[in-house]
Structures are given as C-alpha cells and as structure tokens.
Image 1 (cartoon, rainbow, N blue to C red):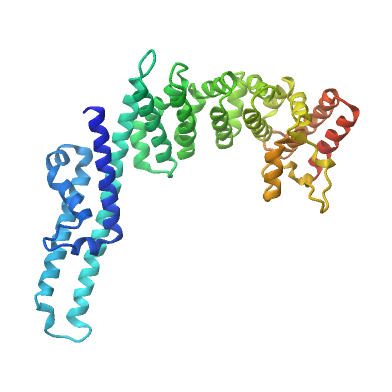
Image 2: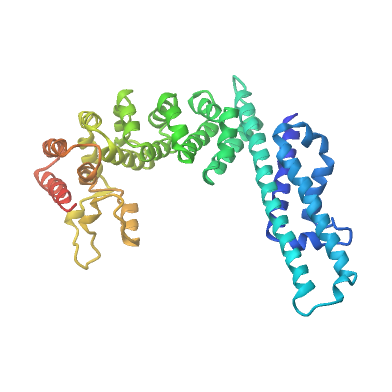
Amino acid sequence: MERGQKCEVLKALEALKKASKEIEANPVGAAENGDSGCDSPSMKALLQLQSGFRDLLSGDPQLATLSDLLYRLRWLVSSFRSSSCRNGGGECGRGGGKGGIFGSIRWRRSSHSHKISRVAGSIGAEIQSWIDRESADRLVSAVRSFSPSVPREAEVEEGEALVRALESRVSQGFDRGLQDVLLRSGAFAAVESALADAAAPKRVRECAVAAVLALVRFNKAVFVGPVLMGPTLGALVSMSSASASAAALHALNGLIRAIRSPLVDELHARGHIPRLVGLLGITVAVEVRVLALDWALEIGYFGRKEAIDAMLTEGLIKRLTALQRSDLGDALIEINDGGGGGVPVGWLRRGSGGGDLQRQYLDARPFASCVALWAVQVEVGEGLRQREKREIKREVVARVKAAAATEAEAATVLAEVLWGSTIW
C-alpha cells in the first residue's frame, strides 16, 4: 500500500473510532435514529465497515476480534429495533399497571442499550489497536526510507509528524496492546536510530529525543534497558554539547529523573560528565545553561561519589560561582527575608514549592545561589552515604574559596552553602 493510501486509511480509522465513542456514549440515540434502523451517522459508519470490509476483516487474524464485535453490534441493533417496533405496534398496550409488561420493556431496552455501549467501546479499542499497528509500520518505514544524502522536505515532514504522533500516543498512559505493537514493529529501534544518526534531519532527531523520554515513562521495565545499553545516551550528550540542543538536554534531565542512579552511573562510565559540565560555561546560550544547571542538580541528588567527584574535578564549583556572579545570578542570603519583598533562603532546596514570587524571581535570576543550590541537592540526595556527604561538603568549601573573585564573595557563597545544608 502506498504512503498516500495508508494516510487515508488512518484518517478513516480515526473517524470510525470517533463514531464508536459516540455510540458508546449514546447507544439508545444511535440505535433508534432513522426508520431503517441503520441511519445514525455513527452507527451507519460502523455497520458499513462490517459489510464493506468483510473480506479484509475475515482474512486478517489480527482483525478477527474486530470482525466478531461488528457482527455482534449488528445483531444487537437489529434486536433492539425489532423489539422497539413490536412494542410500538401495540403489544405493550394490553395489561398491567405501571409495572408488569412496561417494566419488562424498559428493562429489556436498558439491557440492550448497555450491551450496545459495551460493544461499541470494545470496537473503539480494537480500531485503536489497528491505528497503532498502521502508525507503527508507517513510522518504521519512514525512518528507514530517509534519503542517504538530503531527505526531501515531504519525507522530513512525514517523519517528524509520525514521531510526534508516537510521543503523543504513549504519553496517554500505559496500554499493554500498544506495548505489544511497539515491540513487534521495532518502533523503539526506529526512533533510536533516527536519534543516533547524526545525518538525520535535526527536526526529526529532536522529535525522537522527546519520543524516547515518553517511551521510558510509558514503561520503564521495558525501555530503560535499551536506553542504557544502546546509543541513546551518547546521542543525547553529543547533541547537547556539540549543537547546544535544548531539546536533547531537556530529555536527558527527564531520563535522569526517571531512571536515577543507574543512568548517572552509565553517564560516568562512558565519560560523558566532562562534556556536560562544559555546558555551564558563561558563553553558552542562556536556555542551555539553565537546563545544564538542572542536569547538575539532578546528578547532585542521584549521583554516587564517583560521579560527584568527576563533576568537581571538571571545575563545577568554579563554573557555578561564575554563573552566580553573572547578571542572571544573585545571592539569596543577602536579600531581606522579612516582609520587604525579599526571597527566603529556604528556596535553596530545588522543588521545595513556592508561589508566584518564587517563580518570577527565579525566571529573572535563574542562577541565584546556584552553588548552595547544588550543595543542598547533594546534602539531601540519595546517592551518597553520610560520610561521603561530609567529605564533599569540605571539598566544596575549599573550591568556593579558590573560585571566588573576592573574600566578600567567598564569605557570601560559603554562608549560603553552610546555612542551606543545615535547614534540611
């Protein structure tokens, strides 16, 4: 089937899924509409699928369940209408008070309505599975068919759209059927290959970055292993450091939060930490520096001693001190904390909450007290033993003294480091 035809099939399937949801929400209205019994637009669409694609549905084992459900829906609708016609013809006009035959009729109609709703819901789920299979196949085909030189714009747009669609789909939450589709189709491998291919279009690579993170969040048990063992980490670090890609660094931060210490260990083992520390340089774009600070804070919280030592060896404290000294930095401890619009030192704990004042201030001064902020993350983190935390604090103190431009700056930064680590 050609790409254009596949696209049309997917559009038709989306329309059929919408129809099934409408019937699920309002089965009686769908069943009663029209004299012929099949004139509701939503119901007519599904029943035409059953009759118009009979050979396809019966010939494909993956569509056998959908075929059975559509036959079941046709039978339920026919039974519902037949019962309604008999009752409308006067059979129910004889006998009984408010209960009796009228109660029986209402019960039968309610039972039919409930069954139609359930079958419509199941049909919608099966159509979604069909959509998932078609989308995964298109994604794998599109990624493999990129031109070896310069892909055509249409190819780039299609690849970008498909990868974004995958990210959106898996972000809806775990679905075992979707997981089976992804594993059988090789969708993760296709996304990973697009991410790792330096010659692939940048737009597609950055979409692949977000899709990998979404897949890990979709099911860590399945997708963490491939991330740790495959080329994903190397590609993310390369994109972050070589092209200063904010999308890659954002995804790397998300992966650290999702996978925690095992991913930090892998970054250290592969020698990636020095390249990432370099992103805190004063000449790097502000957006990237802010994300790099987030990365440093995540490593500070989850990293083991080897990773923390690697960061310090690469001059982390010196770079953070320079950022705090810059126009986008500040020292929170010097700001009045008592009713004059000041900023509380308690903000030194990342993720401690706060209202509009905190957000506005940190948006304007993203590197405020970043040395102490990192030191507190280490202090309250889960990667180090208490003895190791004390050793790191002593080293931070020594490095702050060496990195400060003046004694006054050193005194301010050290006061924040020591004060911040005692309030948690």
